[in-house]
Length: 243
Image (cartoon, rainbow, N blue to C red):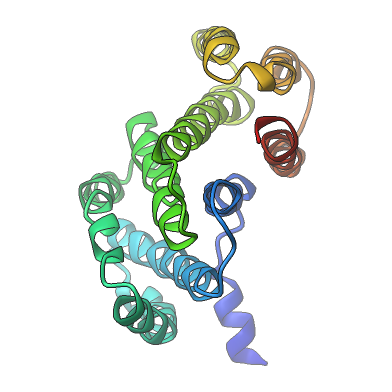
């Protein structure tokens, strides 16, 4: 019981991060076919995320005496899933290559104790959204153009979310961030009319969210919970309207 309580402290509780973990994965499955290999792939992806969280915290704080135990636990859990996937689908290793420089950016900002910087957010978002492609490949997808569109949709959505969340929390008194978020979502909507015409209504809702909610007294916790709802809205919209 004590071990479970200790490990719980090293499980990330950012709602947006969990949405980024799941939504690109679901996009990749939606554009292909669900297969058995998606189960170990998701478990591997989840454990990579859980492993990276204490790793970055250790780099930031230089307290690997504190973060070493969860690193060992998550690393040991990760190894059999990673080994199984490499044996079953060796080409998956190619999909990991673009993630390496992005993770290097995360390490740099963790070392600098500036992990909330927008470039670091964007690097992390790119890393998460790239998951669309290995999931699509495992599912036997053939329309790589569609996979690229869903990757772009996820990327644009989460970059907008990063800007919007900053207007609620860290930059709530900074009007430049607010206007940047609203303008970004307006451009996203206009681009969506061309790139994702069937998703115009959900993109309009995201624009209204960016413009309206920062003017309320919404709390960070409620913002995070609502972001899960917006992610579900986008996924259902893609599933129902896009295909």
